Amino acid sequence: MAFKQCVLLVVVATLVALGVNVVSPNGIDLIGKYRSLSGGEGPIVPPTAEEGDPPFVSVDEAYLEFTQAAAVFIDARDEEEFFCGTIPGSINIPFEYLPDGDLSVYFEEVLPGVGRNVPMIIFCSGEECDLSLHLARNMQELGYTRTLIFFGGSREWEANGLEIERRSECEE
Image (cartoon, rainbow, N blue to C red; front, top):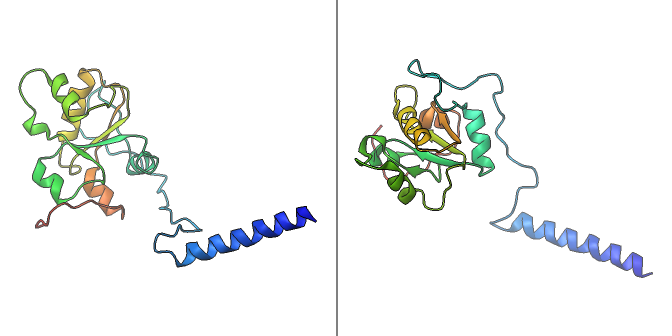
């Protein structure tokens, strides 16, 4: 008899929980809304790439790292472009405004608690922008061992229907 009561209790609790989830504004989707990966296309690699550069990743690889919160995303563009639209949660390290002197101190300040072996995906606007390539090279020289370059950048990210974080209104 006790077993039947336990089963009945579990069934009722499950039904109540599902009902609350359906009407809650913070409910969890029972069937996930996942972006389909394109699969066939590889990363964009610029003609200025050289042997020894950090690896390039495709939008699919970048998105996978993003959804798993497995990498730190770094936007190499200036602050104005960063505020106009970036990959959510990205850290802005504008390559053109890097300070003179020892960059390792600067990177430790802007990436507090982020070790040099943490995966970092560096990006900028897209194919016409090589700031990500130059920033990744600098970081690699300083011992950041897992830097990756998403050369498609924020434009490819947005073109694939992925979320963009906008911190200010900007003209296109």
